[in-house]
Length: 392
Ligand code: APR
Ligand code: PHB
View 1: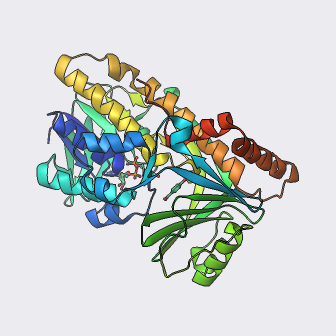
View 2: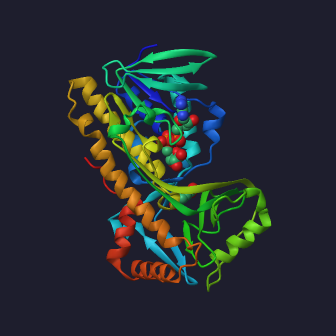
View 3: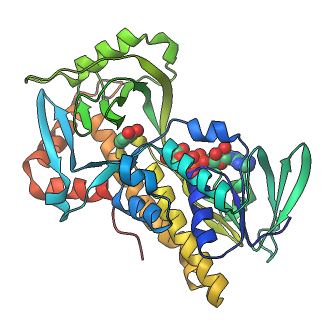
């Protein structure tokens, strides 16, 4: 098989890149190791920056998002029995965010690609990237029980944290930066209307809790738990009781309960791989970086990576100019590190220290008090949360 751009991975990064390139008239093929059913039902993030909404709209993939997305004007910070609203439009000059599940973005992009192209191969596992330094790099992959090759002009490694693309980077020029957090998130989906209009981030001595949502009748909530927690150790009643305790405030507010339909534990890590390009192989999304979900940046970073990559590849294809693609790694990493910093700061500010460090606990409260008392501090949080401008 031959194509202009070989895309490894059919998650949000790979699918959106394929959509953008297809609309620019550039041939590409997506190789996804899992089944359609699997990728469309993996519970992940759900908070979209305005830039992500704009990118999906620009490539004609925002039909359902426009009607089903929930536009939010801010978030609530809850701590020391108090509640504080962070008003995004006031603090950012009009920016908002939108709740729309990553699963729905994937479903929308898969449906468009199967209907309009480019080729999307499920259960097609990339085995290796070969000759990335050449002008005809190759993806060796297995599909339909046969080993095959895809000869490309460019390869996009959109295969997530556990993919194989990074293996093609020479160790001598690769640098990785990692931080593992001493806690995880227990996430649930519940068939119950959200108990809030917008997201609640709750910091307390019992641990962090987040109240998000997926629709007017489906809630998405998270609990900080110790690493290694088995979700089966947490009954529905225990989960609701702990959530209620962590969201408790000195006001008339009740956490509505309902049947839990999904439950999983996710460890928290920060990870960045530099550079994001080697020869004709370019990384995008989780293949290059992982952030803790506290700042809701993972999906949005993947979208900003592929928005830049699509523009760079389009420039090469149409004019031969490599100026943008030569700057791709540097431009992406400038935004990746800012999102990594913000996600780290939000995580450290809101999660209880397992060792019960009293000084750190006071530092958290001091940070939260500064944000809720100072326009400038609140504006800095709002600017990062709603999305810093793209690097170009
Ligand atoms: N060959 C083909 N496909 C592969 C391979 C491989 N060797 N390895 C992994 N994949 C596929 C995975 O099955 C997955 O569908 O690559 C895809 C990578 O998708 P994601 O992990 O979702 O990463 P990305 O597209 O960058 O999206 C980032 O997803 O994980 C969340 O929190 C993350 O919201 C963020 C978003
Ligand atoms: C979600 O809705 O899944 C979500 C929202 C905001 C976050 C993390 C997860 O910070």
